[in-house]
Image (cartoon, rainbow, N blue to C red; front, side, top):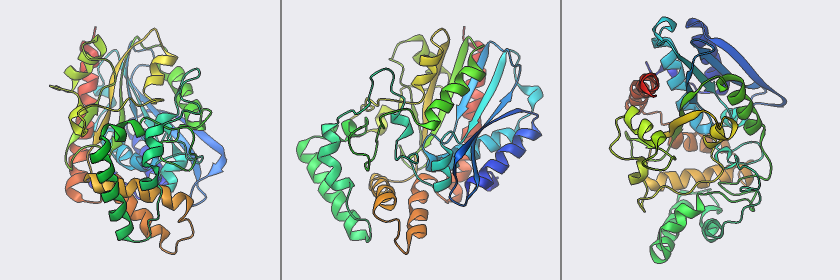
Length: 361
């Protein structure tokens, strides 16, 4: 069962393409001719479509927005494809699966694009977040941007980080996560222009969803939540038809804001999922960013700090690859029980969305 997980971009892509063929999906490839992967491999975002092309409803499932988290999303897509049959897709719904929308980051096992842009902060619209200042991030940068050579450096930074937030308010942490456009070597960097993955995602939306009057989406992520916890983040305002639809699909009593220390989801700017409505304003669109919890808060802090350090200061560290593997274990744990949980629940969440779309009027 856990063979749906992969250790490299090439392996994940091979599995996705093979599984898509087994269900007779229509395949579309959006390749990168400007960049190669970590091992020189061809980079591409692949899209598999199952069901009637002109169906009035579409289930849209996205993996790899944050490249390192794409290994989990890829495994879910593979597991869904090899355990479902095209004949069982309900009439009136097509399913669009996006594999590795951020292929460079997927291949390099890092969060952000080749330009260190956090793709999930890059979908600003109009003036949006381009060059966005974030004083809260600036306040926390001294803790996030330090050395990561030995464990004591992480621990000291985390203890100082916690002391600072205890004294000044934990809302600063949430504000820092919203996106910043002034520190190109920082975390949550918005960039100043649309990334390749941004342009490609908008193209995928227009080419594969334009005929759908109703769209349900899942954007797979990892890291938020406790080990073994699923955290759906619904960004439509509570009480709207879209919010109620998504809550009903996954039988939620409340959205995932309880996973945050302040009890509130940060006001993220430039989210990938919001661009679906920007491109297709006439369609009804509901869904969620769905997180699988992995490790505790300290381990997430350490992983984010390590990822940034490896990209900018630690590229020539003799233990670079081992440190990168440590980082990946926070994004996609090797723990067998966790992987079994993901592969059991991930495909079920897709099926629940498909069933909900059939009843959404």
